[in-house]
Length: 549
Image (cartoon, rainbow, N blue to C red; front, side, top):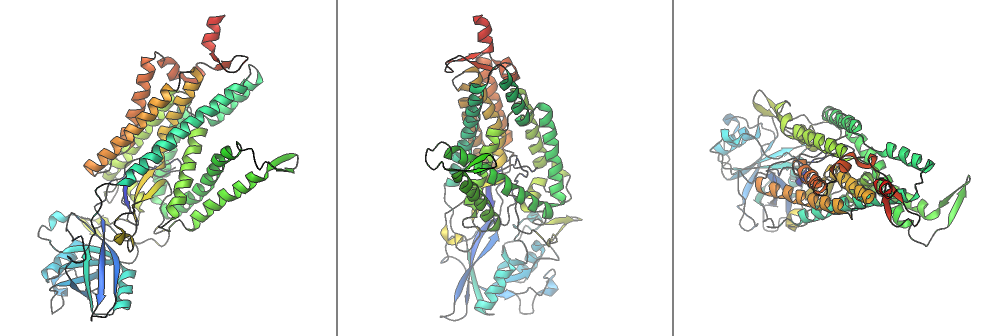
């Protein structure tokens, strides 16, 4: 299973994010990477020569760029991709004064190349890479006098520039101003709270309907069997978390193969989930109920078309999953349906199971975010590695950074365990760069959602006017707001469960304690069962029936 763990900003194709990995997709807050897109405006020689824009990646904390093309300095572009540029002896005889130098990645670290280029008089260093665009990072404190711009460019873009504009090229680099308000956080917040609230309420309605048809005999046994099949006991929770840890390690070592397994599983599971969600709505509509008889069973025609539609959505996403402009819409639709279906289907039987599940997953997220950097060879957390891909990071070798070997397969595949909302601002960047997006891990919805669903079912069982459900939903919303606040203020990755777990568990505990129902709430549905009077309108609990007798 894979741990889904972060809410925050993602740069597509870099994604140095702490994203969770697993079918259940547990949850965290992705740190804001220092990498930022900029536009490289290239033009050929002569007044009528063509010009073209390309996307580059730079570190805004190392070098500030002008926000408009007019304020950007024009530099002549020099192609040194055939030279390592790792020593001063490799500087061309004419020097590099007022040049933007293009070099290949490796064999030395790009900061070494930048130091050599600056010594030769260059104003900018563009690092071309054949496979993945890396965020500019490294121990810059060892290069305190570094003042030139360091940016990464895709090698295919550089080849296109050379073929389109010729050999005599001038470039200007600028970074359009970013908006002060990030509306995507509001969208992510609305999606999260809506999905959790709807999933919890739906779970309670299923519980209510099940209880209305239960009799005191065989139907009760059938209901118990159904609950056992869908219920996570404390022991099941522990086994589940162990499986998640094992799956995390397997993904870390065998990512380039297992990522396709995860994509296939997501397609199947999300298509089934989308069908379950939409079928529940369609069955309530009175029109189009013609059915086909097959082997003694009847199948509604509209449900056949619905199943075909859901499969088509999953297949289209699978085929075009790397299409940045619109594939995120399908992934979000499938992801929301996936989360809703799990929240309303899986059942935690009591508050004890909720505490065990959320507590263990909190420790699980903290370990894989904060502890694993001390274990891994390159000092990155396993979640970061899985989010960016094992080949998407630099590696350390005896204290020196070297290029990570590009993998022959799955170089750009990402685990589909997040809700994505692209930023539709600074459109000039959008025309040439990958879209920056805000992401929300499925686990940030599913794991707290299981607790909220239990609160809703407990309200149904005890007739407590949805007090547990409403309070826990509000607590989840507060936890999400706190997560965003920490992300904005600290700009450093924080496991979201670090805030969501205390907010939801403490709130539910306080409500149970104030209502003097902690024992019932802790033991859950095994403590008392709901029975109905003959009118099936006024619920009567087992305790109330004994008192009446």
